[in-house]
Image (tube, rainbow, N blue to C red; front, side):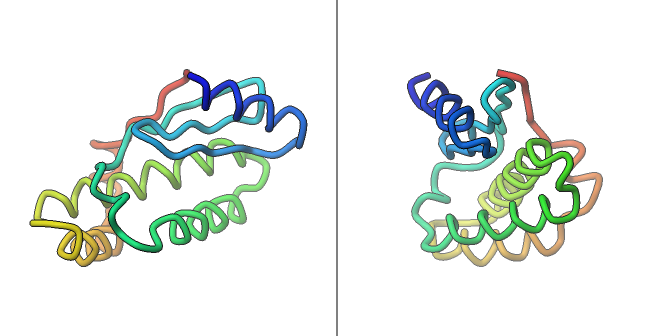
Length: 121
């Protein structure tokens, strides 16, 4: 809850969309707050996932800049979905990295639709 309040305050003062990763990823522009509930804890053990999700968020926002909050939440959830799918086949962080990348590459609409967990907070 502290992270949510800090994110809202930063978003209001900066005018930016703020995303805070965690068990539930928090996304806000200061007034509305949504949570992306996808992902697995072991993703924290994989180097460069922060850089990769930042690039994915940028790509999603570039496609739909008028809906940056939704684009950011979607990117975080899709990244998390690929992590969940990769974890189904992984034995540890090294194999999760490989299976995560394969899962991200092979994502389809059915997989995303059945696993997407974005809620209003």
